[in-house]
Image (cartoon, rainbow, N blue to C red):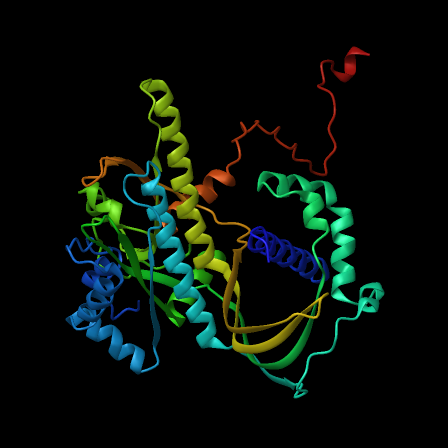
Length: 465
């Protein structure tokens, strides 16, 4: 065997592997009993956990355990055990380091990813379709000798080698160029001796599991978020979600009651509480049901994004800031839409298996080589599609806009807090239904008529005629 054979064999392997990939691709195309303190607690996510340990995911698991050991957490768990509410949680790591100028945006998307995971688990718990398939395939050719090299096989169009020959002819120019870049003579490559592979043993086991769930996301609300970081700059966002009949009813009432709610709660200084600390708003995501200054239960939604403009021109930076606030507003409204009328389709497909194969490779000169492969299959794909269509939400407006510099990485983060309340809906319906007043014209008095006989005045006596 000459010195070029290993190189040529490698190229042959790369080409055949790519060709088979080509063929494969072508072939498969809160109730009255709730206190205001509880409402305030639900409306705020905790400050991020800033501890210097390596695994931020484990940090969050420990933090969630601590959360459910608090008095408030125990109350939630007790209601869950009574079947009154559903509780779920999930986490997602920020996929870039803080040195990335778009880190703050990736941070927001990490929350969205964690929220999606929690929603997936929720609709799975409500109902799931399961499909399982297992295939075991064994083939053994116990013949002691490999068949001799048969040149007639090369003319059989059903053989793989014939298919590869056709691919070679189609892609000859491209292949020659690639070979030349590897310092391999295309003519030498084309004159390589042919080989034939004879399978002697194959044992394979493959198991496929498909899970599919379809369900409503209406009434699913994040009640607590956490953020963990380590010295390496890794950040992971975690979120706890709750769903209940009461939250679903509130979502439906917003869409159907036309703002006709009763203010049963003790008034709470909502605006003052939200605007007291702008930095704290960096840790707030998603919707909350809270109490406002008039004692109404209202819906607020926290949206944020980042201004990643590095321009030295203040006018340019301001335009990017305005655009970032629009994106933050859209994030807030996105969360409101899913809370009010969201639905989701979730599919989880996994395939695992193993394969053992032995083949004999026969060259033109009948030299026989043994090939053995041992492979593992471990493939997982999850797909979620969530959407919402809310036709007419009246009274949704901005409660507060904010801009801050992140204390850790000096990145500019902007946010918008959106609010729906019965007061704002009735106010805007009044604006919507307003009509101009018209001056009243004096009406002519209607003449009264009666039955009588009238005559002219008498000026002359009877003797005057």
